[in-house]
Image (cartoon, rainbow, N blue to C red; front, side, top):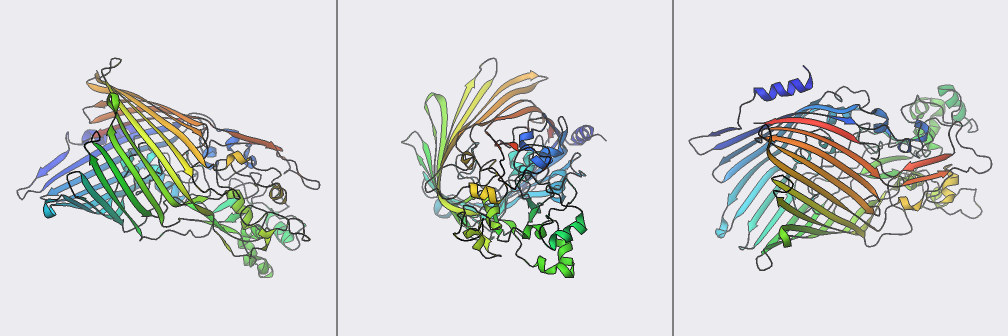
Length: 636
């Protein structure tokens, strides 16, 4: 049965209303089910400035282009049927809430372009989301609410801009890629004890303690929106040589020059003649996950009736990072020859086993613990009927990722800004403090800094405008600032693929230096705009709702913003009695910066044969990911 026909048949088979029942002992229950079908398609071809040089593009990395290479223009990247079921049970002061999700994506379930993680997250899944018990009490005539179990806890006043106060629950990003999905389906509920108690008529206190740690689920390697092939859960390697070496799209070749004794001959016997573009990588080893304990928070909320009934919030939180950071283990430049494509046959050969025992550079992801957050928020009614809300958050020890190119160089003992880049007097050319770091040394890939984030939102509703029943406009502006950002190291930013120093570029055969504008900056800001109009009884008795959204990262590079990148989305929804919903959407990504150059190898060196010396790297990783989608859902 075709996907759309199947979805409509399932929907039509359901009852006309949510299932409700009430028992004689006072127990009541509601079961709400939503069935949907949706498809989404790529709207433009891949841009060469986002494809690695070795893969036929012009950018200086092949570690971010798998998703771009896997989908052609007008090719579906999602084609899914989905069911969401909410169950709510109440008996007296007690209650239970549960939510489950099941979906099957006809495009991705059996795709040979995705690994096991990609197929699990994008192809098909049946998962329990929320599942908690609740109770309400009145100790000392004060209201007390308690929840225990897997739940979503929302704090702060953010609307669109992330990484503020509302960081308690991680997100399954892949769930947001399913057409017709809702935010509630992507938030990952966490096992927690939560309580809220009224202290006075105007003051309340709220707190939580998490009993397990969950991480963000990134776009899987090879999926349409994936932009980091090395950080995905099923990634196994990071390809070296700044975009000029082949990745797993090519057969394994021989990367070992014949000038390296013994190893060169062994590699030639295994994989044929030397190929200067053959894949060369550092392997991934076991990740370091965060502890399940030590995450908690407390919040106070005060309603100031004399200040226009403004609600103020004060927050403190200790939590572990939900997003991964790269760290590495120091090896030697030669070790990646055995640590990459040759490690298995080299280690299995008794005559060559000594080569296997040399320090092998590798990388892993880890999740820094005990991030301290303090926050303030407000929510009030402004002039002219505008609703205003905002928040400020301060982290005294926020981890920031070092530039990954510098971390890779450090892991190989080559000149870099993390472990050293100046020539040691009297030593061989290229010898720096980085080379003196003992093999096997752990290289932590991040540094903690003091960080502030501010954001504020305005919402205005206009009745009966332009023939509509209502028009709602929402705007949010936000900014990030790092109080003590070091200047002697560089932190990761979009398209920061090359060495930061000329010495590092020569020794590592990059032959170009990174434009410093690519790195993270001390200050960054941007804004988000959205609007929707509702036309009741406009089409077959349903409500027609055109909408638009615009994002603009104005300046700087930070956790939320990438200078000059923009997106624009148009959508049209039709809602019939809150049961049937049909939705269409088109989204385009544009703007951003491009870094270009020409490699100039020193005497005795050369650019990889068959590859151009000139290159360009696009710093907007989504510039060519425009898409259009359609979905239909039925709720009962």
